[in-house]
Length: 235
Ligand SMILES: C[S@@+](CC[C@H](N)C(=O)[O-])C[C@H]1O[C@@H](n2cnc3c(N)ncnc32)[C@H](O)[C@@H]1O
Image 1 (cartoon, rainbow, N blue to C red):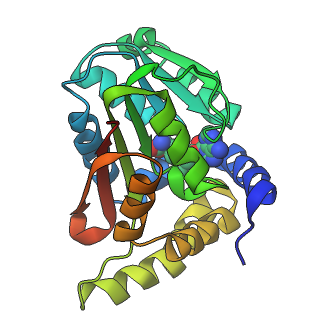
Image 2: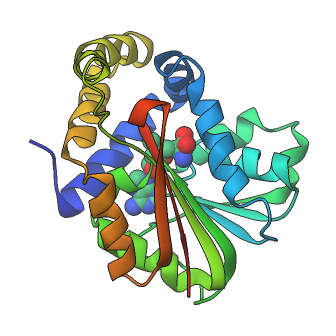
Image 3: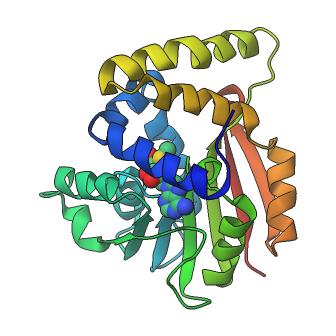
């Protein structure tokens, strides 16, 4: 069973604070390095937008760094888990991108920003972890300027007949082994598989985005549908 509501929020924060130091290594090994390409694609969607950009569920700042690398401008990186942000800052300590990134510990479902503050909002592998998905999406619309763009990168369930069952097993059995061995928290990676299994299908998520007020919602699969990249505009 997956935790829900306030319980999920605490659970997720605690899990990420436990796996912080090895989080990026597990991602890169588990995705054969493709996670960097996925974030590159997400950042590209925002490249024509000036700052400030808001990166939600920013974790160890990998997407924020890529956004700045593609076009240096102010990126506000927000995460509920301060350990993830602090570790990201430590790793970027001597990196020129850090001077463009502001860190903020906060909840993506209750953003501490005025309406219409950002030209772009991004979330990589974060919306699946929200306790109240619609609330998070509605906050994204609220803080975007009219004409601003939201970009969401999230895991999905591949459908290709031969690949899908192999990938399911990979997620269910291999990722907990890998994640468990490297972080000492096997359960965090069992949660990964369960949360992907329980997450809405791309069309459903796109529908929710329209319901909260986004327009021009579209999405495309990356890497055989292991991940989907969603984009939408604030009218
Ligand atoms: C899978 S990580 C993704 C990190 C980063 N975006 C990346 O691409 O690697 C999910 C992040 O979402 C954060 N998170 C979960 N719920 C959140 C919330 N309600 N508000 C802000 N951050 C949240 C977690 O602390 C974690 O750092």
